[in-house]
Picture 1 (cartoon, rainbow, N blue to C red):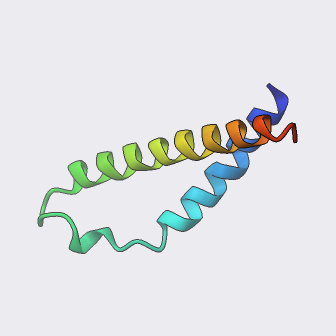
Picture 2: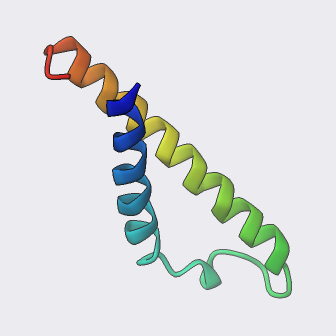
Length: 65
């Protein structure tokens, strides 16, 4: 459990850093700020969850952690 918590922290930092490079202003309609923020937040949470679980499964299958 300790390794998974550390992995969540690292992946959260990487996902926030990588999502910062996306210009979401051109993707969403004008004046739909709250919907864009909710989507961005849910996308970030989903990426964090998926990447962390993928890495945990990968590390577990090769007996790294």
